[in-house]
Image (cartoon, rainbow, N blue to C red; front, side, top):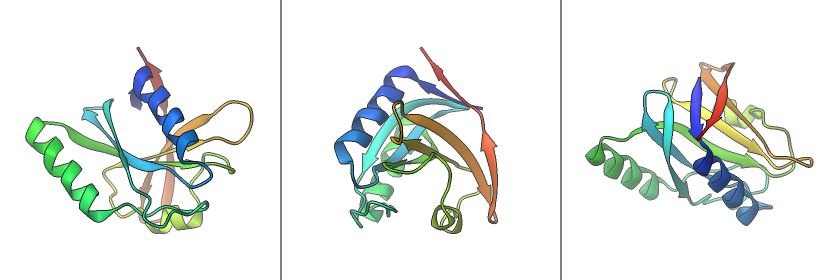
Amino acid sequence: MLKIKKEIYLELIKYAWQEAPIEACGYLGGSGDNVTEFQPLTNVDAAEDHFRLNPEEQFKVVRDWRAKGIKPLAVFHSHPETPARPSEEDIRLAFDPNISYVILSLKGDTPSIKSFKIRKGLVEPEAVEIVD
């Protein structure tokens, strides 16, 4: 289970709406299964139907977090117009089997957040809890 602090969850929603109609993306970090950090990253493709992290930003975040004892727990991205489930491209590009892949959908009246473990093309849903 991935536990996301409520303030982080609200920040994800705000960021996703701010970036729409392109997919917002970033890293979620913390320790164990507790997400306590969010770092927005640039979607270098600026696309409405996929994302690509900026490698320089990506490595800087990982380096900075490691120095602070923060572990990258998940890759985050939004789906402005589609449900919170991995696309074929999301599955194909999920290279790290040890990290979670969190998708926030803005489709519908209420944002929906889901998390997945993706290993060798196999998608396994992971429970998400929003905590105080």
